[in-house]
Amino acid sequence: LELLKLVPPTAFDSVAQAPMTAMSSASALWRSSAATWPCLPRRVAGAFAAVAPARARRTSFPAVCGGPIGAQARGSTSSTSLPPDLAMPAPETGKADTRIYRPMTETIRTFLNPAHFFMLLRAHGTSFFAGVPDSLLKDICAYITDNVAAENHVIAANEGTALAMAAGHHLATGKIACVYLQNSGLGNAVNPLLSLCSHKVYAIPVLLVIGWRGEPGKKDEPQHLLQGAITPNLLKEMGVPYEILPDYAEGAFEVLDKAYAYMEKEKGPFALLVKKQTFEKYRLTSEPPVFQGEDMLHREEILEEVVEHFPTEPLVTTTGFTSREMFELRVQKGQPHEQDFLTVGSMGHCSSIALGVAVAKPNQDVLCIDGDGAALMHMGAFATAGIMGQKNFKHVLINNAVHDSVGGQPTGSSQLDFPGIAKACGYREARRARSASEIREALRDLKAGDGPYFLEIQALPGARLDLGRPTTSTHQNKDAFMGLLRRT
Image (cartoon, rainbow, N blue to C red; front, side):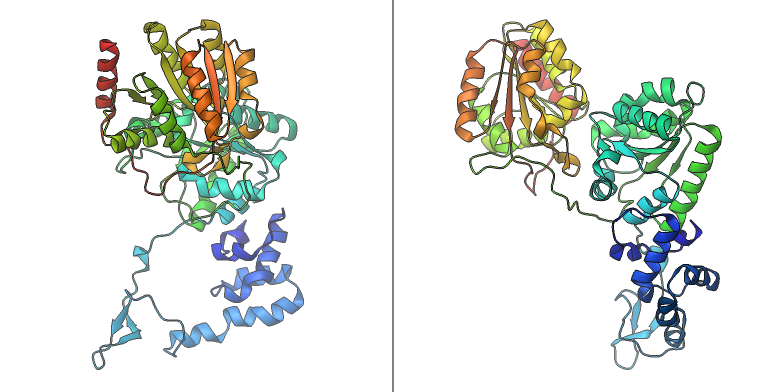
């Protein structure tokens, strides 16, 4: 761990992705990138030399800690120039002179390399990961997805499920698992945190990595502001100690040391709060299983078909890109927003909101526009809708098989038979559409048929680069939607 602490994050770029022990990792890092490292302290260089091959020591060590760096310090010329904001123009020529500068490195933004953070977790013995993806964690989530075997990484349906799996892993192996989630997902995790993992119940240690949306002082969407403000106190009240994850390697090392020391001693969960832009960018390289086809549509095109077929019915749209695209679609068409309740938060509860409206307005068809990740999060709602038997409840699920709004990680829904699940839960009708022509025919049948009626529409992943956000407030959205319902 002491060696890993001093390894620069860039060193991880050239290391093989195969699982390694802490010491063999250090050796591999030395061999692969020693020539690019800054001058290491002699005690650390000596330690690396002990695990590196003799030839690597002879050829690489002098280049790292020998004369070239010292020569630069004495003012020798170098082909590597300083950043433009640090170099000062020489009085005689007016050109930048790298020997005359004002170093202000404390103003340079730092980021935590996902590979470095991952290796620190592995060095502490953590090899199992589970969670629900979050936009603030998308880089570390993508790195885990690319570098952890499928049996040791589970993108769970909800945060409580992820926490329970981490508990099961600990029971079977005695090891501490890592669970990642957005802070809004703490609501789903409260029960297993308090009644399963707490040191007052079964005393199961779990490392929680929590994306801190709505952090005080940071601009964010309204659904995150209250949750963000109370997140630290919520953890405190639940007896879960926490630290803010630093955005640099040495700080992360120290915080993880503290976290694992607590979990080993107290046998309870420990949380790391992750602020916006903590991690370096990392792009997912493994291809998630998604739907493909020349005649398939993107979600926004599907929403346009829904609006054409249901021009007056109230719609309840799910969280993420779906509600944002519906808002912009109304703007594009010059239509008011009163017909749509945009569920900007409360992931997984869209269908239950729509069902509640349908029960209160039995003579008015009510549409739910759901997503695959959201539907999976609280799939018990399918059974409730089936049992209620509301003829005016129409449930459309747009399935693109990924968590589109938070990084494109797979949901696993490409392998699920959603219509079969809906029928088993008591829906009167359930079907699937894929191509543009199938979608139009299915929407016509949905409009004419009695509910509970379920329609899965398989879609292409992705959204427009210039997709905006609703410009009306959540209160305005609610008031306009309630006004429409009072008039119908």
